[in-house]
Image 1 (cartoon, rainbow, N blue to C red):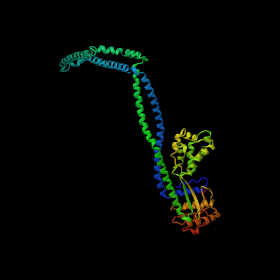
Image 2: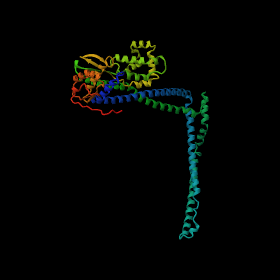
Image 3: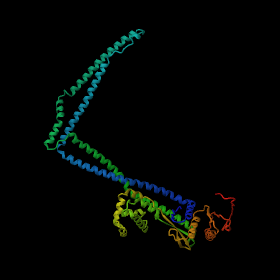
Image 4: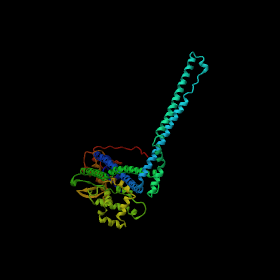
Length: 489
């Protein structure tokens, strides 16, 4: 039914009546609920993002703790070598100069050698086809010209050899023959020994200057990683901080769905009559459906056979009872009861503690279970909708006869309430099958005809009977009959 009627234990035929009511119900209910359902899905997706951010935030915070610990260890190690920082910097700089000179000088020497090798390849004479040249009209001219080209190439090769040697001589003049070169070379050769002497003079265990100064590079890596983690932490915190607001938005959507269903239920009841003339009343209770609640609650159950696992359904019943006993302004959903246990255990009613003690449980056991091994499942369940409970109540002269949920209606009264609900559903044609046996048809006549007269409205009713004596044929505006020539098995 559009109202979410759940009637476990009732006859299959009665359930089919409510299925028919759903198919024939007013379209405006679906039109009102569809955008609300989309809003609920959007809120649930945002909540899922916040929940995922919570898990990632814990990982980032753990990583930050490790980086902070590493930074502290680095600082202690670096402070132990503070007296030789200057000597380490000097040694590191001298060795960097030496590596730079060696790399550049090797490249420059290779460039000069490439020039010399190219110069050696230039004077080679290109072979001419002697037999062909003798038959060319200008063969001798080609031979003379190529001899002159070879002379030019020999001159160019000599020039390249001279330039290469001049290049090598210039390099020697700039470095090896420079007045400061010997002093620089000596400092390079003594860099490591001077650093070791500096360590020994200050009674510090000698370590390589490169190894010591790698600590600085390590510090830079730690600092860079911490900055990245802190930026991600800020973004994740914004997602997590938005979780309460997103939950409130979802609760508002659930309330809007409830108000819409309740308005629809009141409209249906009014169609059966007003005041003491009303036949039925549909009572809608917010998030009170037992079946959908326990379906979600069992997702949080603890595995095993300990006390908490054995009494988990009872704990869920206690949560549901606390929700139903309080106003929706305090608990916008049954899950908010559990959230209060988690966040504000000191405000929990002593009756809850007493009931848990009867099962030899404590509130901390429940909260530790939900915040520990079932933390992720709990965050997911928080956004699940517990369906509204709808009860169909039969009235007589304004007084309550009974209700389907309470189970205090007879079969005939259930039938009357179901037909009244179907008749009030919409103005589309309604088909009713009469009982096959004549005695049942007579009972239907006593109950159905008064109800149809009482709820007369411009709605086509199609009654079918498998026998020739239709008990309501005198009430029909149009009657048709079919005669079966043979049976089909």
